[in-house]
Image 1 (cartoon, rainbow, N blue to C red):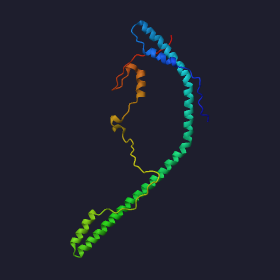
Image 2 (image 1 turned 120 degrees about the vertical axis):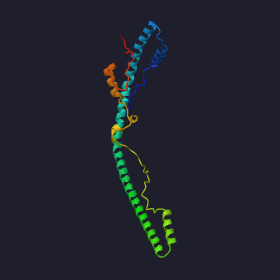
Image 3 (image 1 turned 90 degrees about the horizontal axis):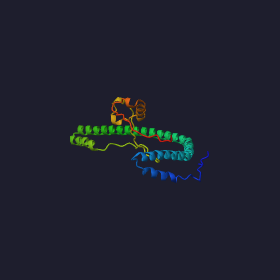
Length: 215
């Protein structure tokens, strides 16, 4: 793939364009003569812009094509790697989630076992005529830390983080501040219907502009 950009080292000098810009911004239309001058300068500005476009557009097109080709090549190489990354992440997340589930189940089992053993010890103390010991055992059970199972495995080359996502359940219930106007559709209707446009909540108005060009 050829990635060389053919830029002409003898680039056209556009200093006149900067001078023309300064002249244009210094012109005030106050009478018919200055209006005529502005009209002529508009034509000159448009001609100069055509020259600028004629010079730079082929270079931009070439650079754009190069950019697209490089992106396509990068995607060709990177897509399988991205798929491998997603697969490995999915495998790791599923395994860790399963181990965390088992850890919680084991901790719950150990907690119940601890409670059963303490209750059994309290009953035995009560049966042996030591109610104060039984009461102490039951009170101890309320402050004793819960037993911990073996922790779930962790990643050495990454961290497992919780991500919150969303999905639409009823579009009619979504508040207005979370909705976005379709400006492309509105512009199309306004251009087609003009002052006959009837869209509730929108005011249609017109402005004036000049299509510069030599007659």
